[in-house]
Amino acid sequence: MPKSETNPHLQAAIMQVVDNQLRSNDPPQTQQTFKRLVEAGHAENEAKRLIACVVFAEIFDVLKKQEPFNLERFVKVSTNFPRCLGMKRNKLRPRAFSPHVVSFTAAYISV
Image (cartoon, rainbow, N blue to C red; front, side, top):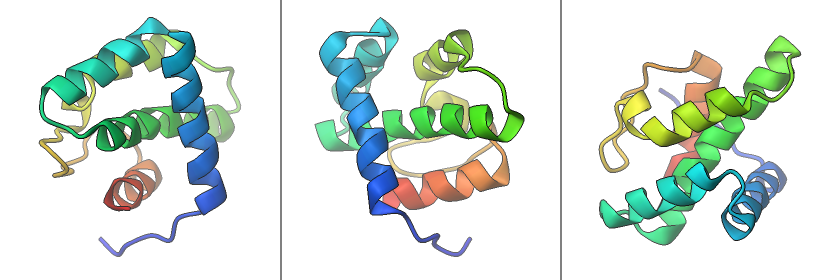
């Protein structure tokens, strides 16, 4: 898969969403996922980037499908992340999202 170019402004905005969720503990599953990823051996910045992929996937669905934010879906993916993508420590073997989301996610994680 060719490496996608990433938008640094988009990355910063999504990382701000993750930081806000962690700081406010809303939803609490973001903090739980962060702790689980760190305890599994991921560096804190890597754990945040992985969570950012879930945030991006939800944003993508909202924009692509023109539907409202789905907290239940976000929590379900966050709770099962990164297992839902078949990830093992930065090895992306996607199977849950569309090719466009996977392409962005792979590029985003590799930064």
